[in-house]
Image (cartoon, rainbow, N blue to C red):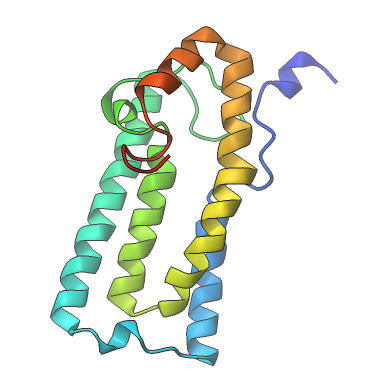
Length: 163
């Protein structure tokens, strides 16, 4: 196999499929076995919190994508990473698109009272961490060496208080 074909992280699944799969599964489970816990919360409060989370998540995702584009590299892990993005949102988290995606999912769960989505986010977080983020980190370490290791020491994996 040529080096060009190996120049990408060995993730277990294409990352956007994880939130999409758990969202579809959550809707199905909520329809089949409704838990109705989130639905007990005041609708206006639920909508306000959900909208805030959804917008915050979308903003973080967009900031991450823009930073990668500014650096001339890919957000898609099926392509090689061409440069490290260490500024902008990447100063606060090494994984803004995953942090933003989970935040947006929490917002969707609140807005639509999808209890199952909240529950499914737990195993999804493990899939993201072990099957996507860790392989991406190993790839970046191999590709960028000390530059990446230095960056890892400056920015948390997820948030300053998580990871």
